Amino acid sequence: MGEGRSTISAALNSSKIELIKMCDLNEALCKQRAEEFGFHAYTTKYSDLLEDESIEAIAIYTPDKFHAEHVRLALQHGKHVVCTKPFIDNLVDAAPLLALAKSTGKKVFIGQSSRFFEPMKRQRVDFEEGVIGDLITIEAYYHADHRWFLEKPWSLEHHFKWLYGGLSHPVDFIRWYLPDIAEVMGYGMLSSNGKQGGLKNDDTMHFIFKATDGRIARVSGAYTGPVQPVTRDSEMSCILRGTTGCSQADYMDLRYAVTTSAGEEKIITWEHKLKHYFRFEGKSHHAGEYQNYLEYFADSLEKGETAYPDIAEGIGTVILLQAMDRSLRLGIPIKLQQLYDEFGLDNPVKW
Image (cartoon, rainbow, N blue to C red; front, top):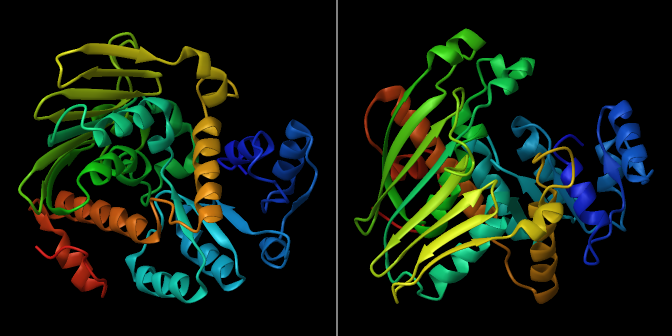
């Protein structure tokens, strides 16, 4: 119930979702959340959620290494699942989870929250309506001064990588618009600030992607240095360049810019929605995005439709992230088909 704090707020403020019970191994944190939200139905046993027949879906915000097991148990107990990104940390678990979801008929939704931020939502609508024409290329980045994050002891462990903890957001933008990535090449480095802070893995990275149809895209991430003023730049951004227009959606600033096919230039902001998106101290946590995606998931279940990213798309993003990781280690381009073959998974597009 650390990151899950946002889902608690989302559920309690939504007419489409009913919060039944909260769970964390840390009872002190359970009590803290209970007092914070005035909601006192909590447990320290995951089995209590699994065995509660009134619960239709379980939202999982545990550390990455536990996702696969917690998702498996939820599906086996007949629950739909919301799982935060990245979906799983070991692709060995991918095929069994795909088979289990299919056999149970239960839905697994991956909480790629940035898709559900207001500027990104508007950018997607404009794209689908042809406002910028056909997509030529996409650029996305996440540049943030996260040196404060190094105060968390686990951020300095050997397994922690900004590739998964940070870049998974802009990488999801790439797959949202170019889902058929075939190959990736990347370079990374550990900055002097990162070394001084005790990081073990790269904190500065740049990647180039190539899709099966030949289109290219790029992503960059830098996490331990100063950033531009927000009036000039945002920590995270997605830029679409089309045949007749261009658009840019910013995060965490509620700002969107577009040049339309008619030559019109617009900058749109949503300051009136600040309290929806950021409910806690400063611009922290993701309660507004979580409410948006939980309500989308609820609507999809009610209509009998699939909510995206689904389990297959979530696994596809992990494959791409692991291909990026492999490219950093080996210093060569990596074809995603290698990973599909290695882990016995069907690739929807052969390269």
